[in-house]
Image 1 (spheres, rainbow, N blue to C red):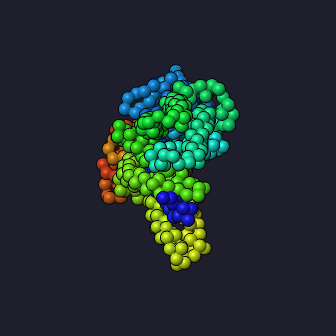
Image 2: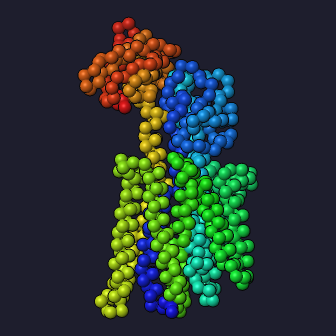
Image 3: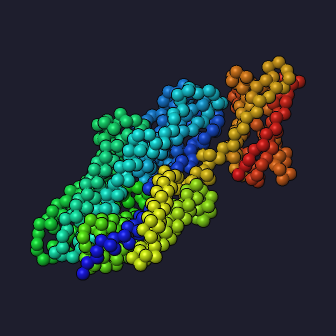
Length: 559
């Protein structure tokens, strides 16, 4: 009993919906590390030069001599190039010598636990802010942009596609296809998946150094960077993947050549173990290995990828067979139907868990860019599944003349366009900061510093200038307040007196801010208590002579 080519159209109609559900169930590829704190904090003006700079991230990062750099106002490096772990997700780099007054730049380019490169920069000042060299603050490069980023993304997609095709085709051939039937097309499909996975893994290995580095094409051929990649967790897992592919090829050749009883059973067990190990080379280096519950997330991610490969890869192979062969055994279709049903159930369960890990809460689903994109993608997938259901029913009625071929083609074309749109949204999701990380960045003290500036003219000689006010960390409770006064040329202006007071929009105050002169042009106080959040008005009085003074008023938002 066989399934003829006339039934292939049913499978073609539901294939786009199956691919879309795979995309929807898969969790985002990357859960980037986020800088949540630093000492000194961003924008702070400290009276004394620190002996080191400490950075705190949401997850573990890989350390290299260039992971954290501290640059003086002229752009010269002043750190000791030996970053070390400082406990609780914190990393410290020592500073060389006694730092002179001025503004310093902290630049970091690190690789997070999920293998994604993360870069950023911020400044702090010693004594008082100053101008910095134009090249002191390095450009923060998006690692997924540019030729190297695009090539790396393409190779990563190709590796996933090869893994899915290899898993599904091998399972279909060993489990679903009856013994004694022609297997040439199926064998070629398995070989195609293996070849794609091998080629894309080699490409990822070659591109990795440039991808996590500056992103320049010239770094792709840098042997030193390639050697450094082998020393990273991602590089080791790439090597493990290549070894598993070699072992799989040996097992495949043995199974094809042996006719011994039980060979299929041995191939099934051995192949399943190899496929699980291959899936682990993704789960052990990417999003599942970072964030909450990694002990659960890694095996769940392995199962998710295997279920996706079993279903979608098998469906691709079955569709190819239906279109290329004169007939397909009905027994193979029935077996695959049962395997696919189990795979879809596993995909839904593991996909829900992965989505929870990346979003974390209902507010994050509606208040973050990641969450909104996820909702948009889910809506698109729901629509695509409905179109797949309609087109499949239309295919069933095609022989009775109730539905025209032209109408069926329109339905399938609409599915294809919608599938491309969903894939585009998914691509954006893989480079969008997950909702958990975005919320961590929003509540981070590193971005909570309140900074305002105000120009003034007291009316007397030398009475023009500018006041820069920093309230650190800009939250309810104890705060440090720094006021730096400069003349129109940017030179520090040593005024006789500065007074400040805060008044809330709720009627609290005015609260005197007991500023004291710390150095020329710099007035500060630490431990000043702000009792409630909200909008406060800062009244800053600058006296430039015995008789000349001016009061400036600026709003301050305190969280």
